[in-house]
Length: 474
Image (tube, rainbow, N blue to C red; front, side, top):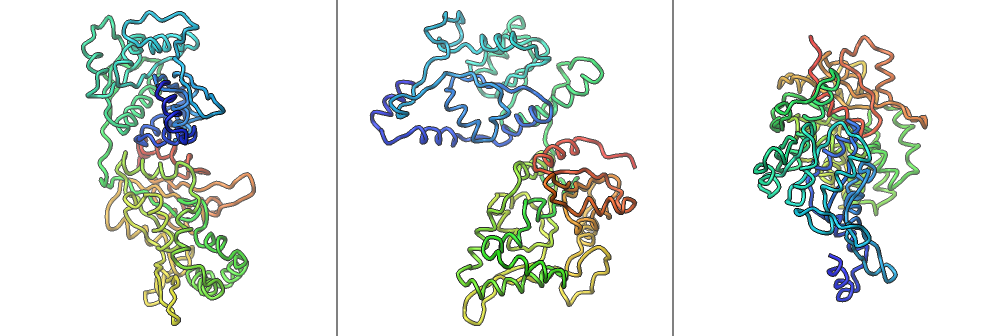
């Protein structure tokens, strides 16, 4: 590897260290593999280390790119440094000439993973060790593990066959197969849940209790997850975000008009007319392109994917926003396949008399329909009645509702004690959200469990817990 990088610097001097780092960051990976590490570290307090015959530079570049830098406590790999003013990346063997050579016949001269594992175990006492590998170079490390440890060996690779062929005196640890990141995530989740239960009663995990569970098939519909959109799925109000981007001076006017006429589609539609008249360069396409990049909290997208892919949940959005903005965000974030249905105020492009186009917004409950009679909701959209219609059309075992504002109280009040409301908590900077306050003011009207959240990471962790937990008894 070192000679390759030296030759690369000679023949392609335009290739910089940034280019090499970018190449490492583009390595293909299954996002569930990353989720498995996050689960182990964040939810169960595991220590994660990487032992690799690659380079420290490459591994650290990738780990940082996928957001695992603060979850991987140590990277053991061939060390790297730069020469010639940072133009040449050099690689040194982990087992360099300055130390005595290892005596392992199975491992290459530069790195014995078994010796590394022994060193790690000598420095700290761990109750269990999980080793994830796939190649011949991982066999030595597997031989250093104890009876209660687990090796996750990738199927169809050399390591697995070596482990299966080895005699018991060489391999004492449990061996489990994995093929994809999905398998590993499911296996980790099962292992840690069983391990935590066993620790609670002070017993060890028996070999046959560690299984790789099959994820619930997508679309099984046993659990319904409903997201509010603004300041829940995304971290801003999408409608006001548009004006903050293109006409921030109108924000005060928007708030004043909404206070006088609390029917959001009418107010927003009027403001869009002012925008198109006074800022003609701001086209509907430009607005949607910018809206697609609205801030979304870290791991919120992961939580959506996990709910669908691992647990077969159906996910719907009920929002007092508009369809054009929501669709733009879902497409940009790659969430279209995960969202089963969106209930919101319809929006589309309309051609004006001068031939230009603008965004038009209509209320979800249009004027020609029977007016809603809900004491909690605006006349244009009752989230509670929408949720009732969803549940009437199809039975669900449980409903999880994620929201933040007072408009989410009505659907929260329709849920049963088997269900869960995730209500956004107030922030330390004084930013306040209405759902929790309204629940606190009307505690007898909400039967569902109420769980506060502040970040996408909170939602991810809560989902991982509630999907595993049994619903409360009726």
